[in-house]
Length: 133
Image (cartoon, rainbow, N blue to C red; front, side, top):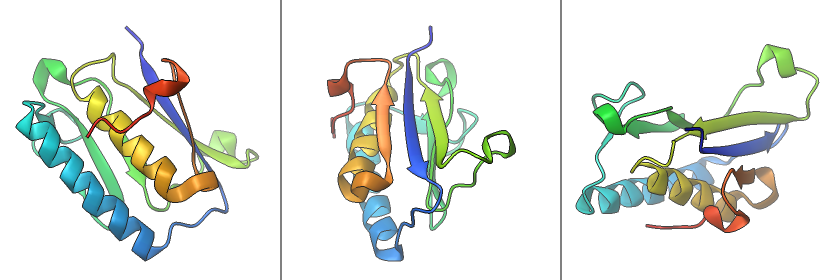
């Protein structure tokens, strides 16, 4: 099924190094808490380990609990086909698999940290994007 989360960032918006360091530190805690709850996360392909570094936070579920990769970038680039759009569009279809709770927690964290420099929505209710961890 297609349960998806969406986020939009203004093309000209900047995320400072300090803000990104705070986001990645909190994202690391969220991922650790999810692991304690038995939510296993892998790399983009549902194998390996999540990636948290100076450029991105990315992960997927593991095996049959994977779906689409979640990827939040410090400096996202606009897709060529959207070059005239003032916002950079990203999405992650989780199909409400177990890693969905981690996706919404990190999107809520990003929204709380970045304010009007990120707009987040979901196929669920507006309340769907909240910190679970």
